[in-house]
Length: 203
Image (cartoon, rainbow, N blue to C red; front, side):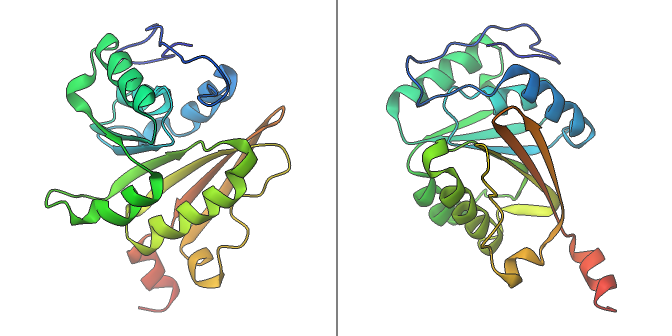
């Protein structure tokens, strides 16, 4: 597994044994990063269920300003730090070893909190649909995402991660794009901007 493009292009990233840190298929990663490439410049990025940190590090390599990485496992937090140092991107990374729900509940209490422009989510496939829906609701409710920001979800075959959000939450999503790579589904949600929402409401 490697960083595909940008400042750290070609950097080989370490992985852990087993499927808990399943790496995103390289072809899928390249295609959806190309689809969001113009959104990356100076962006603040959150990588939930970060595993190896490859998605956040790819974003940094391509021009994102800073990235936060969240994973509950100590070995993953250590791995992300090693990969960030290897890619010479460690100074732009904040790494949190904690549960995703605790992070999404508590992060706003930090004095220097600012909304994220891009949020990646790659939870375990066996619980991905439930976790993605839960996380999207928390992200919207607790105002973790900027107006016009992107939430990018990886899920398994046949899963529809945005179902069950509820009408109020669904209204905040401007559009949804789905890319399929074999059994991998990448869903890109674009959040409605406050200005455009006001125009649509006649404000």
